[in-house]
Image (cartoon, rainbow, N blue to C red; front, side):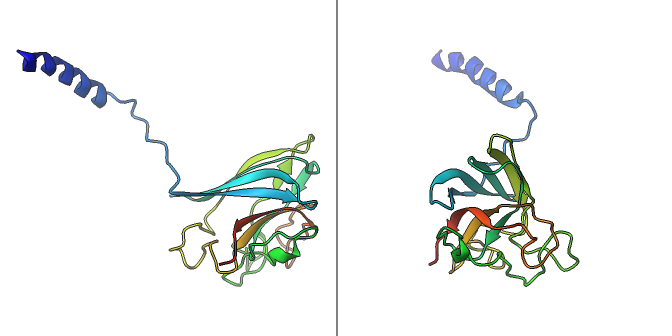
Length: 182
């Protein structure tokens, strides 16, 4: 008799499971890295979350205390953010020896990203996507987990996507270590 009571319940569960809403499941990142963004005075101004997905790398950036307007943002080839100029982060991440910029016929660098726009109140909340880099170690050609490490830098001006070697984007105003030197 007890078995007969479970049959209707089992049938209801199976019917409900089969009547899903038909939407694809949300794609979960396979790996994430949290990056703390610091200004030139070594004060924390925000963060970036780098997430590896089937569609490449997503960078979710949240920051404050920046000058309003357009700013270049790049991945640099050394995992150090020593202020006040962040020169310790080196040049743009460029494992393929490409030219700088999306508009250059021999570009872009793997570390070139789309410009960001900072609101009038000095904040930015945006998501960038790139297929040029990865945070998976097995992606040897474009991993950001290199022996030298890598850093994310926001510049004072807008990247023109062509001027060599860095898009005439101005001085670095914020930096965050993605991966430290090994």
